[in-house]
Structures are given as C-alpha cells and as structure tokens.
Length: 299
Ligand SMILES: O=C(O)CCC(=O)C(=O)O
Ligand SMILES: [Fe+2]
Image (cartoon, rainbow, N blue to C red; front, side, top):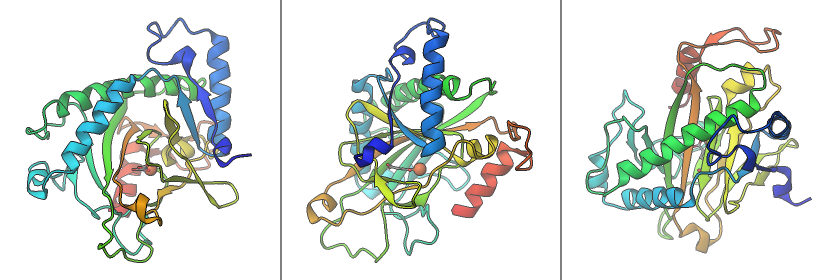
C-alpha cells in the first residue's frame, strides 16, 4: 500500500457545497459518506475530500493574495500585526511553536482572520474579499462535514477561525537550529479542521505505528482532520492525530515558499463538551475553558 493510501480520499460529490439543496441528498448517500468518514477519523484522524464544491478559483486567489501579503516588507506586515489579546492579524516568523519541545519557533508566519475581524492589509486589492468569500465557503463545507460525521449529533452554534500560513523559503545562508521545523508536532485543539495546501508538500501525519507518513497535496482535494475537543467529545472514538511540517532537507525544496490555509472549527464557547457515549471518560468542560487551557499551554 502506498503511504497516501493510508489516508483515504473521500468523494464528497453527493454533498459538496455546489449541491444547492442540502436536503436533496439521500439518506443512503449520507450514511455511506458518514461511514467512510468516521472510519477514516477512527483509524488515522485524517482524510482527503474530493469534489467538495469549493471553486478552484476561490482557492487559487486566496493562496495568491496570501503570498502577496507575506512576501512584502516587515514594515508593511507590521501594520496588520496581531494584538496580544486577539486571534486576528499577522503572526511573525518563529513566533509560534506548536511543539514546545522543539528548540526554536516554527519557521513560518501566519494570518488569523474571520470576515468581520477588522484587520486587513489595505495595500492588497481584494485580500479582504477573497479571504472572506473563501471563509464563507469553508463555513458551508464544515457544516456539511459535520452533518456527515456527527451522525445523530445535534451540534449548536460553531465558531470558526481561518488562518493563512506561510512557510518562507529557507535561504541557504540562513542558520537553521538543529531540530527546528516549519510546524512542530501537534494535534489541533478544536473539533474540525479543513486544510488547503499549495503544491509544495511537506505535511506529515503520525500513523498508528508511530511513524510519520507523508500527506502530499492531491490536486482538487482538501485535507480534513479532527481536533482534541472532538476526540474528547467522542470518548476517544475519533482520533485527533499529531501532524507536522518539517524543513525540507533538499536544498532545492528548502528554497521554495510553502503556503497553506487552515480553517479551524470550534464549538460555541459556552457549549459543554461531555462524552457522547455517556461514559464520562472525561469530565464535562466548556469549550471556552478547554480551549483557553490549550492556548495557554502552547503560546
Ligand atoms: O501547514 C500545514 O500543512 C499544517 C498547519 C497546521 O497543522 C496547523 O496550523 O494546525
Ligand atoms: Fe494542525
């Protein structure tokens, strides 16, 4: 079996966001998708989705305007810097360290946004519109993915955050600290993540036997994975798997920027997360308390 065969590709055609009337999908199709997706999320916590219905052009424009943002001068980016008490805006190079045991900050930059976030680069035409449009498509798709995986589960309001992540090319003159990575080993915190990557590759997912396997970009697909809160909610039935992005060792790959767009879904802050199977394996906790705990741990 090739490595990627371990991360299944699920065909979402019957319930993609281009299927206008979401009630037109038959129970049979919904059950089939639900089974396929839950099996993937139980086994490895990740899957690819094809025929998801988000227009290629929307993704292309979002990746393009992100790159335009990240490749400008630090002075220009500083105009959009993320305030300490906010999730929105620009986060500079090496500021985040997703695996605290790594010796240096992750070799990446990021930009957190939602449509009403109020922090936008004014010098990049369309940045706000392009990212807001994609955000709304992601909300639609995430809700459909929830329909599929949360069989019998009625989830309340959800909160969304989109992050554009930029991994700059590593110049041959740049001293990389041994063990420094583009994005340290971590699992996501919330319930669901939709991840779009450009064609550079580098994402790795931990397999059952503890080895990291490649999750290369597959044209036309997006990566779906679940976070710790969903694992807790399902009393460990679905797994929030660890993943990372290393700095490529080959000089040629190292010298190329990488861009990804992650869309994180969290439950409403007041929602109490208690194990769905009534096992009480984990104490009930509000989404707010859980996420605060995780953020303070990491940053
Ligand atoms: O850039 C990627 O491919 C992964 C990013 C990621 O896992 C995260 O930001 O949580
Ligand atoms: Fe992640």
